[in-house]
Length: 206
View (cartoon, rainbow, N blue to C red):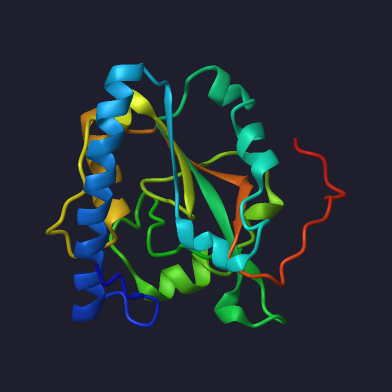
């Protein structure tokens, strides 16, 4: 399958065609996982975009992926989706802000429809990584996400949707009992730039 990028024009016809193909591929993966989950009684499913390897061995913060499972909300079973905060310099300009890369999949209350201006200036330039609290969302991905396994099996990706495939899948989760149970973890990070270096914060989580 030709999974060409939508980065230049996610709302163009070639962009929607790519999203349709992505939804088909994700449904193949979803059905394969469903057979395993039902047989093995898994509690969680983790989805990761393989192209993260393009950005180096540390493009996924493995310790923070595990740390996310130690959050109070995780121990209490308070979420169905916990997605990564994907870091990138805005438009790859090293003198600009580090924000959330996967703005196409990112939606919150009041912003369920894709808006390029909002995505650019309220998501892709927003330093979510400076906070610790989980961020309630209607949809997100960021290259990595934890899913409650039983919730994951409730839905399929909409292959006809003219929007990001994650948006439709997460809308289904919300409509089938998951409202208020989708979050982005700002410190469970993936890096979409080799120029972003990790360092300890001087701020303590509140």
